[in-house]
Length: 221
Image (cartoon, rainbow, N blue to C red):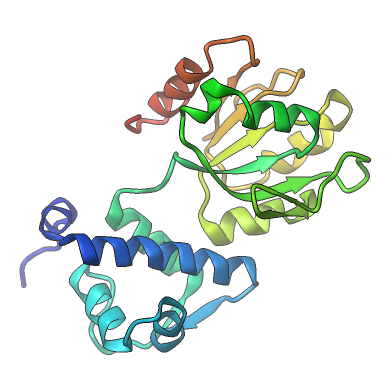
């Protein structure tokens, strides 16, 4: 049997299948947020509005399914699809902090040009500035950070909290599987094992900082 070749497979994917695969990842992340550990081909197909055979054939084509398996671990399936799509994504991030500083970052024109999509958001619930949602994403207590990052296989976190909350944030962040931290808070964060950090301000070259962050991680901008 011919060895699986990710680059060859990606080159041969038609637009419809590529779109479906990307939508599977999005849908699986929704399952992950809802706390589902396993998912069936049928459940994923129903969520996506397609036939189960379409999902099964797509997974078979990219080398994840054997054509028979029906049940998958959500976390593993996200990981497998993300790897095969080459989108262990640096254009998606979780946001830590939802107050004035975070709003300033999100509204910054230079930041917007980075085209990062916020897929999860967290804050310290003792903060008086916490909001119920941001950019349509429900804000969760910071204590859920590690679990959600693992379930959604997130790589990048944007930190934008005031100085008084940084110690708590730092303790949580460096105990996750995150690999990139883009810090806008006034407290300078130092890199830890396997975690790259770029400290920015809204008066710095934000786009250059972002390119530097992902370049250091060995990924393309």
